[in-house]
Image (cartoon, rainbow, N blue to C red; front, side, top):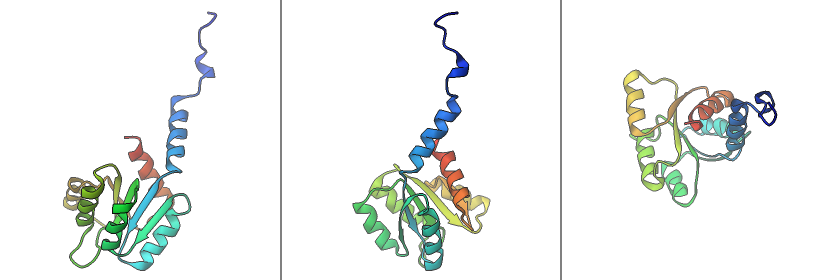
Length: 146
């Protein structure tokens, strides 16, 4: 029929969606917090290959920075300063920024109970060490689509 759009000439929805996500990824600002300087250095260098990053070993400095700056994603180590866990920092960040960002906790291991606690605290997902750029991007893609 004349005038009927040819479905084969239209780009697939999946292609358009992937392009949108890739374009969105390139502008993502990431806040990274880890009390271990070496882990922080490695994760920042890794993520800075494709993202704009700010990194802190100090919870207080991270909070101070967050009050004055915007970010799209927080990547927080599970254990921070003595007596301070990722959930404590996330609670403060949400109080400052609201739930307008994705939050990932970084850990070697978390059990089922901890996973539920982290999700209840507001974490989007868990990133397991060692962090890779590919694993981070996969998790980010998964959650940006929602």
